[in-house]
Image 1 (cartoon, rainbow, N blue to C red):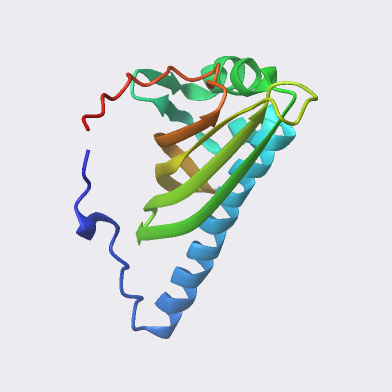
Image 2 (cartoon, rainbow, N blue to C red):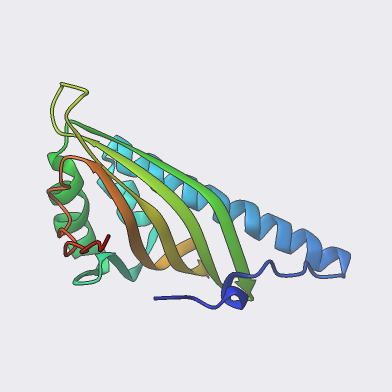
Length: 171
């Protein structure tokens, strides 16, 4: 799926100083939320993970997988999927943030390393990006949707993610 460049074009900041300040504070809070997302995954803090979402929040780690609501996110998403690894390391970067009042869209790049055992040479890695929608709540910015777009894998297959169909290469 190709997303038009204008979807994530860098928005111009507001010109009014008070609106600029609000815009900057919102961007910082959204950046902090994206960083916190990676941290709680790697620390396996499932209560904190769920708290990053609105109650009806949705996580789609693959096109055929949809986890909806706090209970599914807690029971199926975190502990059952990522809790199986000896450890994980998620790197999140290149934040594109578009704020429209009390909603926002983000795209951020990801690199996830998943240790399969204490042997650091046994790992399953994936990389790509997250497309997210967010909402301002009384508790701060929260995820409404998080969608993973996986681009490549390395190491062993990711046991928690459906394996993409093999792509035939013609010489």
